[in-house]
Length: 165
Length: 404
Ligand code: HEM
Ligand code: FES
Image 1 (tube, each protein chain N blue to C red):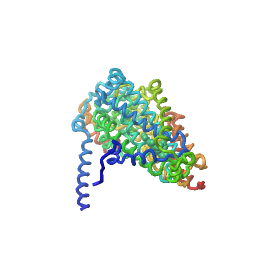
Image 2: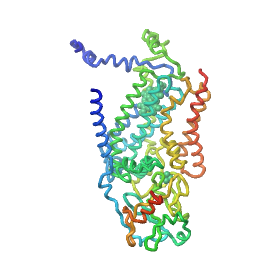
Image 3: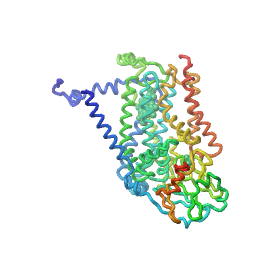
Image 4: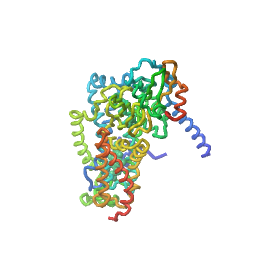
């Protein structure tokens, strides 16, 4: 008797928990609103421009000739080439806890005010606590435009080699 | 069925149905309180009163607040602050009380630690108290989201990101908590629900548990003396009020409690009318902007010490240290291995431990407010490591304590 009661109550409890969990999930409308197209010909060299995708800031930095010349192997792997321009494109949220780091053009680096993390112009960490370089949003190159939210072969390659999450 | 007789008075009528005389004895006139205590024992009552102030001011704010990302900021900063008559009063009372309640909680906690009031049958008081601390923290955080200013948004972003648990990358969990990729409408409405319904309900239940846990062991006293409450109560009831070590909770002890509450309220309303600024962060007077982080993010003062434990380390170690700091206080009754439940001043090494912990937490609080650069980073790191070492050392320090 006790067991039967327990079983019925248990099923009910699990079912309610599932319903409660699902109610807290992001709504379909939130999930669907997800693509942004950027015209990559308009960006000035060496200046950080912030775009918006899924409510998040997206950093776009068109690299200067000097930056391209001094790129290391690991920096080259994060480089996004559209036409003959080179870009640093990343989700502009600190990989530590999500503040927006500020770009300091004089140092060509980013400083996160929240817990003091730092990144260089290529998006790599130069001072902890951030655990990894800036995340790169899913992108697809279409001529001289870039579609954020869609997975193109260049992004897939970066993901496979573990350059971004 | 029980036997009921024709009532001789309203009191008798109620007494037959609700046993009000018995309840009154158990909760008030024969709830015995030791005489040998000081004003620090009134902090519990001060907390109860402050919670009442939060509840009442909250109800009035709720009548004009709009939990909508487009309107929330204006409903607070324009409607409530400027249009509603005395709206500013409720907001100042609510903000100041939310800040001061933590000051009193910390005093209350450290009083408990100093006098050993978490031992010898008082463990459940301690545990329920720590649960109150955790729920109060969640209540304060969820309330901080509601004005939807810059600090609300970015505190919401940073704190919910903690749930990705660093190297575990639980981004799905973070998105589930928010109901979106970033804090947005779903986030605001659910934290609104938590702040005005679920968490206050939990707090009221926990206050009930906290009081119930205190009823059987009774409150401790300044010397950690084990009072024989039955014997002392007999003495008192036999007429030897001066010789007995106890007095009635109501009205006798309560009148003392309320005197301290009176002084507290004078101080409290002084803050509300003349010094409310400390409870309202200037950065939060800018509306939330997901594309701009304020130059310097810090939590309210009462979270600074644990925030500073998170900050100086790399992400995973920082989270472990932070998690440690959140739960370790609950385990105090078991980490303290000494049988002595007496004031810290008579416990040798433990006394040193007590003052070091207090000073360390003050240093952490100060460093948490300063920008994480140079010297401050270093002091913060040392204080964070010291906090962990102090707790690791506690069982060893107290194991060898002499029985007093
Ligand atoms: C809003 C939150 C709280 C309320 C309303 C509250 C209320 C009270 C009251 C009325 C008392 C009896 C009077 C006194 O000794 O001060 C008490 C005792 C106590 N509380 Fe709390 N409390 C709260 C939070 C806490 C917290 C966070 C802790 C720490 C973990 C705590 C630990 C204790 C202990 C150890 C005692 C026993 C003191 C003794 O026996 O001498 N309480 N509380
Ligand atoms: S969020 Fe950038 S360092 Fe913590």
